[in-house]
Image 1: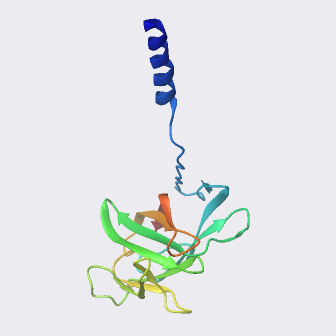
Image 2: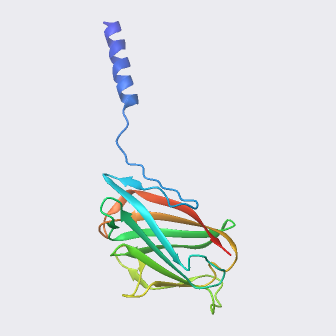
Image 3: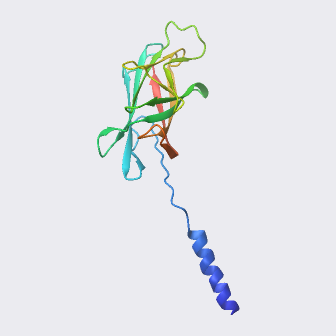
Length: 182
């Protein structure tokens, strides 16, 4: 009888320690080349970030367009919200949330003519996502010293909502990449 009880504990214990609840781990990283697609369910999400101009010069205006594409549909993921953190040499320059209902956030960085020592954001605050959204037809304006020195800037994006303003990802999708400014 004791042998049967011992065997039962071993079988049950082995089953319990081997059991891991299903969770989706999503992570993407970017250092120069386009980041790999991240899987959420049966979809593959790809970060699409473009800058205008493509060669960034310190102190110049910079239009940054950030979208997330469903690789299978080759279309923007709608209702994206992400937190963007920009730092240089370990110093945080900007950390805030941005949202776009159509899935493409346009940020206009303006350094010239700003007397502020910290950035100010011009846009509207979205009530559901507590994130900055643009006025129709315009980018979100970020004035102040962000890309005002040459060197490497570290950008972190943490995607928190997709498909619907109220659909939070269980595990935010993270991207980290560098931007060089001359």
